[in-house]
Length: 247
Ligand SMILES: Nc1ncnc2c1ncn2[C@@H]1O[C@H](COP(=O)(O)OP(=O)(O)OP(=O)(O)O)[C@@H](O)[C@H]1O
Ligand SMILES: [Mg+2]
Image (cartoon, rainbow, N blue to C red; front, side, top):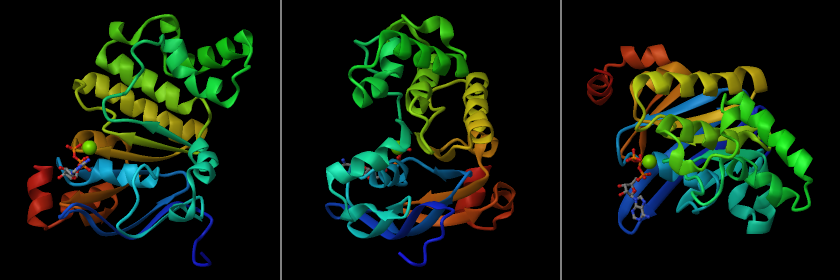
């Protein structure tokens, strides 16, 4: 691990992943640098969610390696992964809130896991602070069923940020939202980078949203990287697939 620079928070090396005979990710190499928002852009089935699942070690690479905070995650047991995962937040595709729990219990879930004896006052204070940050303070006692799509996403982001992670991985944070609500979510993702210095990976297939949050972009097609660089350079690409995607 000598060649890893301290500013790399995630490093993916020659990564391949297959489901049965299907090559879902094919020889992918990329890094996520401290403080950036790296957007992973690609169409449906490109392998974007699979990449995130590999980074949090829900599944293991077929070939290649992934290091997070300079630790090769393939070498770690579930128990050793726990402190690493504690430094990361996840916003899953679809939001994935617990419908039987109130907004407060959803947002504060990780607090109770970390400290089952947390006092009511402490819990309430932290949850309210976090809800404030996503402009959802009035929703403390509401249940997920009564939230709009955009509100659910903001609660999912609040839940991911309450432990003050250094990295947040977002899987399609704006899918199913209208453009105005999407803008609000993108604004929140940008605030987390600028104000809280959180490093992010954002997976999306929506070009507009990619441009609103990316400090750098990677584009995947059928599990292969077809572009890596600044957003503006994507528009200049002569690759026929990319040209088709951006139009
Ligand atoms: N559990 C699974 N078993 C078998 N194949 C899977 C499984 N999960 C995903 N795949 C396949 O892997 C490929 C990549 O899926 P993935 O979910 O990573 O794509 P994606 O880029 O996130 O797509 P989307 O934009 O639709 O969310 C797809 O062809 C999919 O059918
Ligand atoms: Mg996906």
